[in-house]
Image 1 (tube, one colour):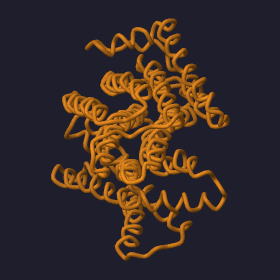
Image 2 (cartoon, helix red, strand yellow):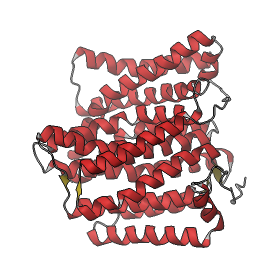
Image 3 (cartoon, one colour):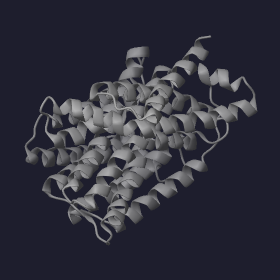
Image 4 (cartoon, helix red, strand yellow):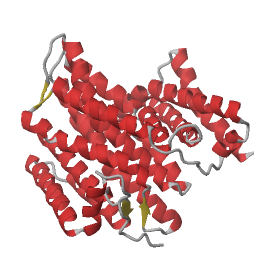
Length: 398
């Protein structure tokens, strides 16, 4: 009975916003943010069940990649909007870059750390171990990160960058599709749907993906706009709103879905979803920005970045590099999660531009030290380029 209640309530949370959207009504910003946010919350539950069920048909890596692709739709909607307007008004380039860098840093600094914190609070385990299949995400994230350091030095994001990053994403999806098929251990609503038989199970798997994806698509912009409108009443700087508040809203589906998996003690799937989302955003999302910008502008060219945007992108690339080094040995401990979170959160306390470079070089120095003086990390980095499983040299304690 409780499983039926979960499915029904999640469906209704989505439906209430779909009804408002189709009716063409415009509630006050506060109510708009609340209603659209509840719809996204319900969609996140449906997405998590769809991803579990999809593992019965396709490799886990591909199912998680599809979950991440749909969950990140709000971020695409916001960033593509800014990129399109930037083609007409160059000042919007700053907002597109701010939204993209903010979303990527939030994903690692808050999302990844939150998974470990959730597992620790629920079970007492002081970390999580990743399956060898997640080498796929870590490898392609590392590849995209290495290339991303080129962009700040050029001072522009252009179609060449788009070609390289979208190609990396295509190879990632190809590798995910070839991964081994793993029989999942279903529970809750996903287990209920699985018991209905193959035909109904496949129908509801697709239906959950489509219904939740549509809900996220139509709720993302109103949710973000409602939050932004509410935030402006408190006199918050617009750039800060675009960089942190809007991404926090647009990232909420994947954050919620990841936490739900962690609460069910499936941290591997949880981290896999956030890893896939990071690969997605650090390849396809960035790559699409200059494409949309070029179409809107009606001419070939790139998105020119000012000094602040260069600093933000360099810092985001440096954080990503350190994150790859940490996960290379296929483990993520509580101490590492705390370090990732502290490094991210303290950045927000110092607005001085020089500190963005200080933090960037701190990430790079930490990465070099991590690989040179940590045998597990060093072997893990080498293992990313081989078929042999990367060693888990860190024991996860209870």
